[in-house]
View 1 (cartoon, helix red, strand yellow):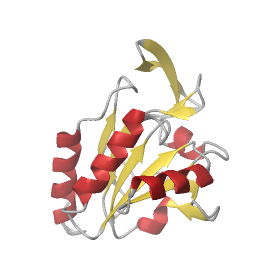
View 2: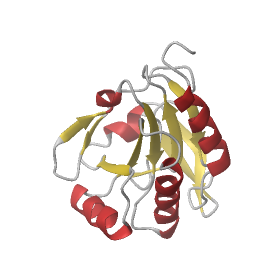
View 3: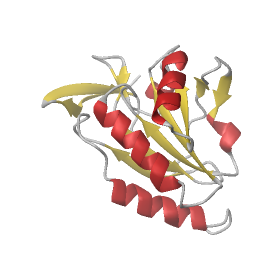
View 4: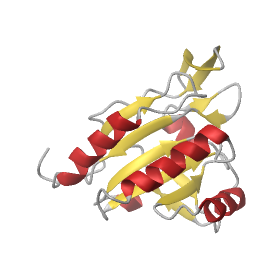
Length: 178
């Protein structure tokens, strides 16, 4: 599997990402993840909806907490047909606890802890930490990646404005609008 040395940093220290970089215009990898009840969820099960994919290191960190809460709040006013997925290496039980405590109701937390397939397939698996890099992707109704933002410093928050503007535009488009 391809390794991208220095693709992101953590507090200034360069880290290696495993997997190819996801670029807009390509089909979204159909990763298999775990829901909070330990059931398996394929990303392709969201075909027909616009999907905002948030890759985060851990929901139990202040930056990931702020990011996920912010997207939860912002997406409420965009479109009912937008699915928001927060994917981390956290155990499904921890994700369920966090979502309940945070009052997050527009975001579905999914876990990649079992085999890190999502991280490797989407090019956001941090080799040195076995965590996911902070990234935001938007997948259109046809399963095509339309927006990709890998945050260079994983301790930083993403560009919310850029992601939300792209999400609004993509969510307004019908499947034949591309």
